[in-house]
Length: 112
Length: 119
Image 1 (cartoon, chains in turn yellow, cyan):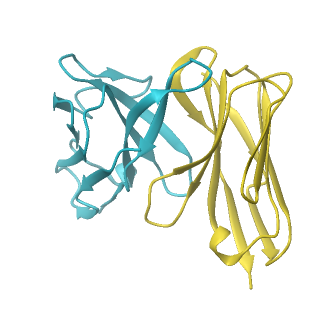
Image 2 (cartoon, chains in turn cyan, green; image 1 turned 60 degrees about the vertical axis):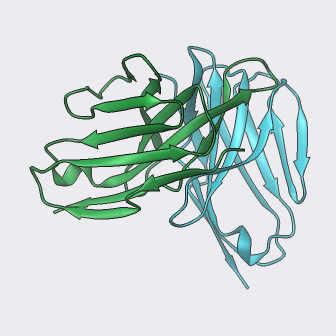
């Protein structure tokens, strides 16, 4: 099946720093998504990307849908303690129409 | 987006027993999905449950181990049968929303999950 490679696996940063994480795939996707999961909660959608090359922002978050449709990145600017959590990329489409394929997740820790 | 609840929120079970997890949504939805998230791992789709039809299982998951019910458009259950410690995971249900703007597939909203520990 389709697989997403997400990196880095974990990040330890100081409050105020910027963060960048990315996902790559050997398959193309129609939709790229970024979710955040807080402890004891289900994933919450942060950003959805629909077109190759698309750059979308949501507050301090910016994400891009790669031109090849096989990759995406998420940037968080000026991190704050509540940014702590696990960030997942997910792709929809390709050989898995209508289903989501998730990356392995990036664990973000923000030190005050 | 839909409000989704799951019961129980967590449980500790003995090996060999079964646990049924409930998922309730506050509005009617076409598709409901069940995922497994093993400790420190990503989310893996178990099956898709549509009302009025048999659930569709992903490779590696079978109905005898994970029977699913979908009696109406707001409710579904997942049973984890004959449990072993390897079944210790977070089980998440998600529901479909509108179509993605790309026109491909449907938005998914997740419940809070059920944390299962099998001893």
